[in-house]
Amino acid sequence: MAVTRNMDPKKSPMPVQDPEVRKNNFDEVALGYTYETAVNEAKRCLNCKNKPCKSACPVQIDIPAFIERVANEDMEGAYEIISRSSSLPAVCGRVCPQENQCEGKCVRGIKGESVGIGRLERFVADYHREHCTEKPEKPVSNGHKVAVIGAGPSGLTAAGDLAKLGYEVTVYEALHLAGGVLVYGIPEFRLPKAIVRQEIENLKAIGVKIETNMVIGKVLTVDELFEMGNEAIYIGSGAGLPRFMNIPGESLKGVYSANEYLTRINLMKAYKEGAKTPIRKSKNVAVVGGGNVAMDAARSAKRMGAETVYIVYRRGMEELPARKEEVEHAQEEGIIFKTLTNPVEVIGDENGEVKGMKCIEMELGEPDESGRRRPIPKKDSEFTLDVDTMIMSIGTSPNPLIRSTTPGLETNRRGCIVTDGTDGLTSREGVYAGGDAVTGAATVILAMGAGKAAAKAIDEYIKGKNSAE
Image 1: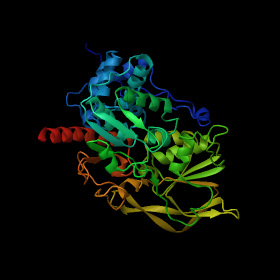
Image 2: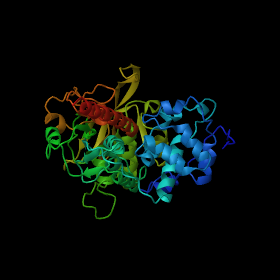
Image 3: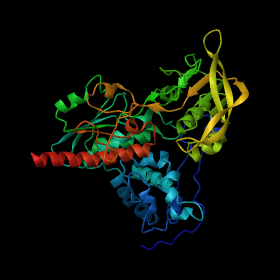
């Protein structure tokens, strides 16, 4: 059906909770498009034949095709197109950095604002969840078994794609809940956990088995997984080991890694009265770092009752790696940005608790190996921030347990698993890896893309091996 295009240069705004209200609750901030708004926004898409947006999507969703279905009010048809490529559409629509990927290549963005691709993906996934009562159909088994280590976005994607091809897939998750960073890292106000649970239930419906409390390298090894009849193994165990600055005072009470802080809140529900895993009641909080995890920690601290929350970042506002939307939401909620600032010492009181953070002002010099201008300390610029809690959010690396219990598995100096760079094949035959376990901390969608590529490679490997026998 021919669609009358909407040539409005601006994308339809996303309704959100009022900042003064939302900073006191953990409910989702972005409220989602209405049916009418979604259709109107979809009509802004020009349905380009060369599909530059698709080429920028790590999981290769046919974006113009699904948006055309929305414009024609065929929401289930749109969902069917998305789900061919993505196992977690409701998640991606909420947390993907679309502005740097699909929307960054949108033709409408040349003379105006790009089409709200992420907002439309979220709408379609939510519409399907709310209106569809049929469970996904389980494919016929092909008789081959594959093990997946880690039930985060990368592992779940690999598992879903392999299950659709008929493989008997078991996912081994170290924690007591599946979801990985989706459940322990990203706060409820950005990604409601009910959404994650539903996406996981959809994977179970097509045959994916998930075993929790299974620490691979301790309960079972990679070699033992092969002995159990698995013909290939995918390692998507993430990067959950936090990094610290190694400055004086980091062992004081009141110093958290962002991982611990967010896990206590998101997974253990520390914001609820009487929580079994409580969290420190803070008045003034400093979060060190400038990425999305730092924004999540700062905004969570505000919701936990902190009066003042600082983002302490050694570069300027222009260099912040966090999504623009997350930075804007943090500013609206009263988070104070102390940029061009670097901590040099955590100050403690007589009880060994944090009472301040000594910092130094920075200025930007020549670009470093990452292409960003290098921060340089200013002379005689030390000052002290009055804080009682410090949250370190400067990155993570993979846990060493799997690599230390898997002979022949090559890793680099950062502890990341080395792969061939295209399909996730490691130095061990039949062992593939992807996501943060390979790249270090990165985005959900890049981890999903790696899981997708590895699933395809595993399918080809098992078929090739069996045809040769």
